[in-house]
Image 1 (cartoon, rainbow, N blue to C red):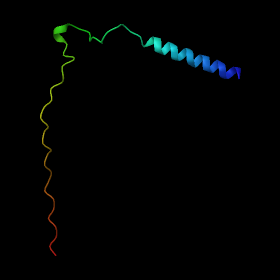
Image 2: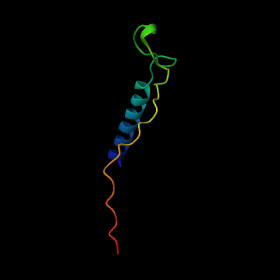
Image 3: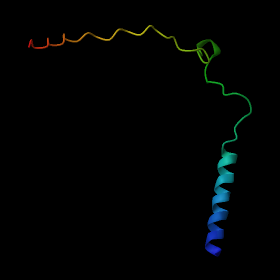
Length: 64
């Protein structure tokens, strides 16, 4: 059972290190660069969808 306890301790240490590594500076993320060149958080423009290209006409059904 000593092996399982060592694995558990290592796993807990890894989880604690991962949680602490995720800590960064406080506050919302700020993109780098001058403020006049940052477009975030504005939404990207949405253009009207283009109509699907028309394919060749379907063949006519044979007469009976």
